[in-house]
Image (cartoon, rainbow, N blue to C red; front, side, top):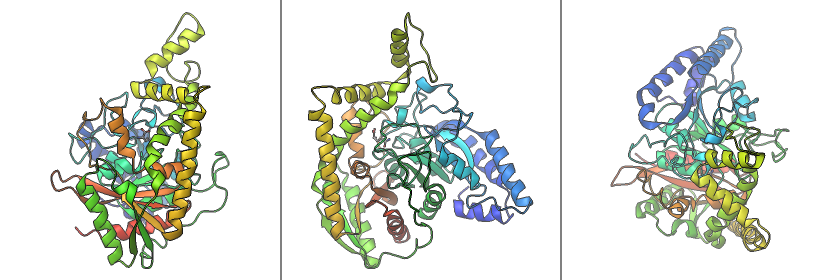
Length: 477
Ligand code: GLN
């Protein structure tokens, strides 16, 4: 099933195809390959069938089900779904059923989308390969010996495998863009505050953002356009109206100034073929009428270091709520303190424990200013350096990930090597900006996809979609 979300919705709305048939076709694809890929923690076959029937009922009654009529949608399993297991791929949440839906889930269902399953992730979204899941790793559909990236690896793999044309992920330091690049699909992190996070289980609240996955730029724009906008239930959500995204997508890049970020392109350990892909993407944009130059954004070099203090600090606070009383797992103990410790010891995996300890240390009296305070100062520098770059350029360009998808198991023993996977994506989160990854070629040895990243300042979401679309049109084969 290779139809775009756009085409499916158009066919379903016009009554040419039934939403039920669309769901059945996708469930058949899932039945075929899911055992190898393991994109899902849960396939919601019956719920999806019921939702599809409701969409068909609307069409039959002459009501328009909405812009995503009958389009199967995969949800990262850190998005709350009422009455349906939501695990964050952690044992600590096993069996917990949220009493409410995330705002994005409600909005997309109201637009006719059909939630088809909950996708696997690195536990609590901490990781870059989806190997940190308590329920087994996800594999890259393009080569099952390789990782799909992470932490939204299940969502990226679901779209790449044709299990669903659309998926949602969350991006705290690159968790949408990096797996999109590694699986050869489009993935986008919107500007902080544009998409409601009500019902997204928090990892690092000053960085977390929900965003779209799709096989093509237009579908990703449609998905974001349908779900974003103010939500009174999320106090960080932007109150002013947001622009349309699909309209204007094909306006081209003539006259736009594009800056290739030196620090993110000449980064240590970069695969020469990835760097070459960025150069040819730059050339494609030049051919389409943009002007391209190199630009230095010096403090982005320290993004990774700042992130690995700020994100764990926030996580250590956000994850304090899993105490054996309020959610999921409880391991008994002789008193409440022991019960609490036993629950957290059994419930959390190694990476989550590492982050909680790192964050607790960084926030402790005597170290707070040296670590957390210093990281916040670096964050301010990154914001300033980006602001200077955006005085000269409309958008910036870099690799999404320094490498193609790596072999499963090759980085699990070395957390630092794993962290380096996000070196190109993290600065965007620290700045609160938007960025998108678009497939642009593949490597010559393994034929694995390469992703190019387009970065924009806050609220430049429509602009980066337009540039991404130009790259998609001009990428040749
Ligand atoms: N890989 C990064 C981390 O492990 C980013 C994760 C994310 O964006 N959720 O923290």
